Length: 135
Image 1 (cartoon, rainbow, N blue to C red):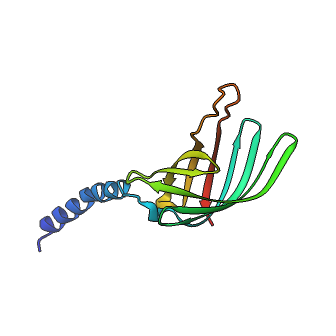
Image 2 (cartoon, one colour):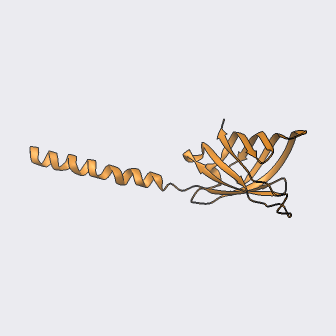
Image 3 (spheres, rainbow, N blue to C red):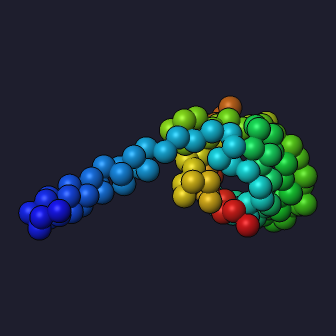
Protein backbone atom coordinates (compact mmCIF):
# COMPACT_ATOMS: atom_id res chain seq x y z
CA UNK A 1 0.00 0.00 0.00
CA UNK A 2 1.38 3.36 -0.97
CA UNK A 3 1.80 6.20 1.49
CA UNK A 4 -0.89 8.11 -0.36
CA UNK A 5 -3.44 5.28 0.15
CA UNK A 6 -2.45 4.92 3.80
CA UNK A 7 -2.96 8.64 4.40
CA UNK A 8 -6.37 8.48 2.67
CA UNK A 9 -7.49 5.57 4.89
CA UNK A 10 -6.31 7.38 8.02
CA UNK A 11 -8.22 10.53 7.02
CA UNK A 12 -11.38 8.51 6.36
CA UNK A 13 -11.01 6.81 9.75
CA UNK A 14 -10.60 10.09 11.58
CA UNK A 15 -13.56 11.66 9.74
CA UNK A 16 -15.82 8.74 10.72
CA UNK A 17 -15.16 9.20 14.47
CA UNK A 18 -17.73 11.99 14.95
CA UNK A 19 -20.38 9.84 13.25
CA UNK A 20 -19.64 6.95 15.61
CA UNK A 21 -19.76 9.28 18.63
CA UNK A 22 -23.09 10.78 17.53
CA UNK A 23 -24.67 7.32 17.23
CA UNK A 24 -23.86 6.75 20.92
CA UNK A 25 -25.56 10.05 21.82
CA UNK A 26 -28.80 8.78 20.31
CA UNK A 27 -28.78 5.62 22.45
CA UNK A 28 -32.27 4.39 23.20
CA UNK A 29 -33.65 3.87 26.72
CA UNK A 30 -36.24 1.43 28.08
CA UNK A 31 -37.52 0.32 31.48
CA UNK A 32 -34.40 -1.86 31.70
CA UNK A 33 -32.22 1.28 31.65
CA UNK A 34 -33.28 1.95 35.26
CA UNK A 35 -32.46 -1.15 37.27
CA UNK A 36 -30.96 -1.76 40.68
CA UNK A 37 -30.58 0.48 43.70
CA UNK A 38 -30.32 4.29 43.57
CA UNK A 39 -29.45 6.75 46.34
CA UNK A 40 -31.88 9.67 46.07
CA UNK A 41 -32.16 13.20 47.44
CA UNK A 42 -34.77 15.88 46.79
CA UNK A 43 -35.44 19.42 47.93
CA UNK A 44 -38.26 21.86 47.43
CA UNK A 45 -40.23 24.61 49.05
CA UNK A 46 -39.89 23.87 52.76
CA UNK A 47 -39.07 20.22 52.08
CA UNK A 48 -36.07 17.89 51.91
CA UNK A 49 -35.81 14.11 51.56
CA UNK A 50 -33.44 11.21 51.08
CA UNK A 51 -34.37 7.73 49.96
CA UNK A 52 -33.23 4.47 48.47
CA UNK A 53 -35.11 3.51 45.31
CA UNK A 54 -34.88 0.09 43.72
CA UNK A 55 -36.01 -0.27 40.11
CA UNK A 56 -36.71 -3.79 38.83
CA UNK A 57 -35.97 -3.02 35.15
CA UNK A 58 -39.55 -3.99 34.20
CA UNK A 59 -41.57 -0.98 35.44
CA UNK A 60 -41.84 -1.65 39.18
CA UNK A 61 -40.13 0.23 41.98
CA UNK A 62 -39.79 0.06 45.76
CA UNK A 63 -38.42 2.71 48.08
CA UNK A 64 -37.57 3.62 51.65
CA UNK A 65 -38.04 7.36 52.14
CA UNK A 66 -37.05 9.83 54.89
CA UNK A 67 -38.06 13.48 54.77
CA UNK A 68 -38.46 16.69 56.66
CA UNK A 69 -40.57 19.78 56.43
CA UNK A 70 -40.45 22.46 59.15
CA UNK A 71 -41.58 20.86 62.39
CA UNK A 72 -42.38 17.56 60.69
CA UNK A 73 -39.65 14.94 60.27
CA UNK A 74 -41.02 11.69 58.84
CA UNK A 75 -39.91 8.24 57.80
CA UNK A 76 -39.02 5.69 57.16
CA UNK A 77 -41.89 5.36 54.70
CA UNK A 78 -41.76 2.25 52.55
CA UNK A 79 -43.77 2.15 49.34
CA UNK A 80 -44.06 0.65 45.89
CA UNK A 81 -44.81 2.31 42.58
CA UNK A 82 -44.55 2.03 38.83
CA UNK A 83 -42.39 3.67 36.19
CA UNK A 84 -42.07 3.81 32.43
CA UNK A 85 -38.98 4.90 30.46
CA UNK A 86 -39.47 6.20 26.91
CA UNK A 87 -36.92 5.59 24.12
CA UNK A 88 -35.71 9.21 24.55
CA UNK A 89 -34.87 8.48 28.24
CA UNK A 90 -37.81 10.36 29.80
CA UNK A 91 -39.27 8.63 32.85
CA UNK A 92 -42.83 8.91 34.14
CA UNK A 93 -43.40 7.32 37.52
CA UNK A 94 -46.14 7.20 40.11
CA UNK A 95 -45.75 6.64 43.83
CA UNK A 96 -47.42 7.99 46.98
CA UNK A 97 -50.29 9.29 44.84
CA UNK A 98 -47.96 11.63 42.92
CA UNK A 99 -46.71 11.63 39.35
CA UNK A 100 -43.09 12.53 38.63
CA UNK A 101 -41.07 13.08 35.47
CA UNK A 102 -37.37 12.33 35.23
CA UNK A 103 -34.57 12.35 32.71
CA UNK A 104 -32.13 9.42 32.75
CA UNK A 105 -28.45 10.17 32.23
CA UNK A 106 -25.24 8.16 31.88
CA UNK A 107 -26.95 5.06 30.44
CA UNK A 108 -28.90 4.63 33.66
CA UNK A 109 -26.25 5.67 36.18
CA UNK A 110 -28.60 8.40 37.40
CA UNK A 111 -31.68 10.51 36.85
CA UNK A 112 -33.01 14.00 37.57
CA UNK A 113 -36.59 14.12 38.90
CA UNK A 114 -39.35 16.72 39.18
CA UNK A 115 -42.74 16.30 40.82
CA UNK A 116 -45.48 16.79 38.25
CA UNK A 117 -48.68 16.41 40.30
CA UNK A 118 -49.85 19.85 41.38
CA UNK A 119 -51.79 20.16 44.60
CA UNK A 120 -55.47 20.88 43.98
CA UNK A 121 -55.01 24.29 45.62
CA UNK A 122 -52.45 26.41 43.71
CA UNK A 123 -51.62 28.36 46.87
CA UNK A 124 -50.56 25.09 48.56
CA UNK A 125 -48.76 23.53 45.59
CA UNK A 126 -45.02 23.02 45.98
CA UNK A 127 -42.22 22.33 43.52
CA UNK A 128 -39.79 19.56 44.44
CA UNK A 129 -36.83 18.28 42.45
CA UNK A 130 -34.01 15.87 43.05
CA UNK A 131 -31.52 13.36 41.75
CA UNK A 132 -30.98 9.63 42.01
CA UNK A 133 -27.60 7.94 41.49
CA UNK A 134 -26.98 4.22 41.07
CA UNK A 135 -25.37 2.74 44.17
